[in-house]
Length: 206
Image (spheres, rainbow, N blue to C red):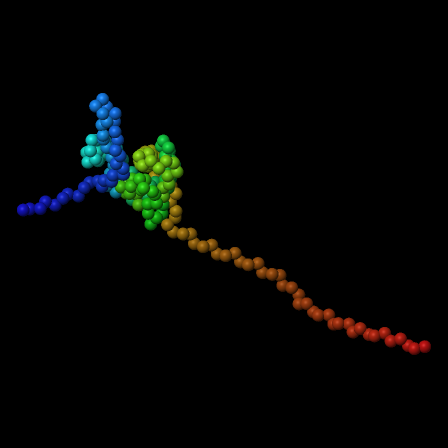
C-alpha cells in the first residue's frame, strides 16, 4: 500500500469565532451556524470572510472559499512590518497600528493578532480602543491593511518612495565631542596682611 504525501497548503486557516444563530420561520426555529475565518500565506496575502451554513463544518468551508475571493496582497517593508502608521474606525471599532523595529514582534490582542500574523507581519504595534466584538475588530484590521495597500500603490504610481515612513536610522550618529570646560581666570595670589600688634595704653600716676 503506497502512502501519498500530502501537498503543503497554499494558505493557513484560522477560525476566529463560531456562533450559533436561529431564524424564525413558519415551521419553527431554523438553527444555523456562522464561522469567522481568516486565511493567509504569511507572505503578504490575507483574506477574511464569514461563512454561514446549517452545520459547523460547512460554515467553515464556506468561510474559507469566500476568504480566497477576498484576498489582499499587503506590501511589507523589509518583509516584516507595515509601511506606515494608521488610525482607522469601523463601526464601534477604533484601531491604531504602527510599524515597529526589528525584533519587536506582533504586539496586538486576539483577533487583530490573528489577521496580522497570517498576513506575514512580524513586527507591529496595534491597539483596539473601541468594542471587543471580534467580527468588527477583524474587519477593521482588514480594512486598515487594504488602506495601507492603496496608499503604497498610489505612491508607487507617482514614483515616490514607498519605504518605511517612520524608519529609524540603522546606524546611530556618533556622539558629539563634549564642549570644553571654561577655564577660570587666574587670580592673583592673596598675601596675608601682617597683624597689627595692639599696644596697651599705660596711664601715668599723678
